[in-house]
Image (cartoon, rainbow, N blue to C red; front, side, top):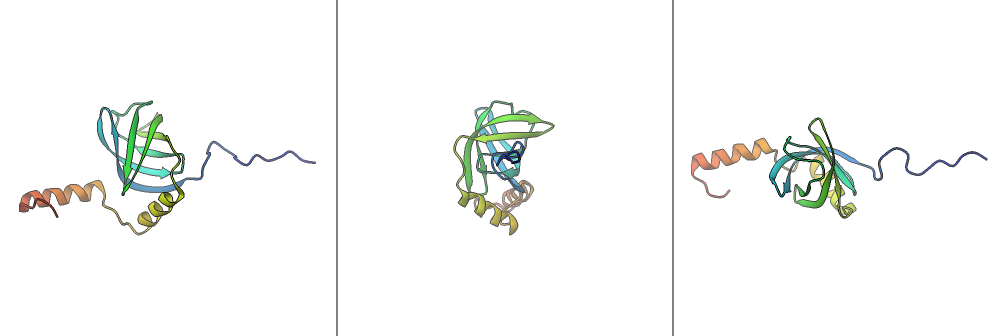
Length: 125
């Protein structure tokens, strides 16, 4: 009767979990502080420093998770990373739970704690 509606409407292959979590992108050029803005089983959107390049391979580390992938687009301080292997749904659910409960430290909180530890002479907390 009517035209079939495709299952995937739009550009997204997987639904995205929107958040704002600190992380690191480890590449051959160095370790970069990033902010994870959204994540799915197939990739992530990051706020990145300018020195990261399109096409760069790396490991994205956030909370206690990591994923290997490639930067596939860059625009105005944002980057898209496509993961080499799909993330398990359990990682997405755990990330969501930690984000909802704010069970993580921002880059600024970590820097403050490191400065306080240095000032007070602590080696490890």
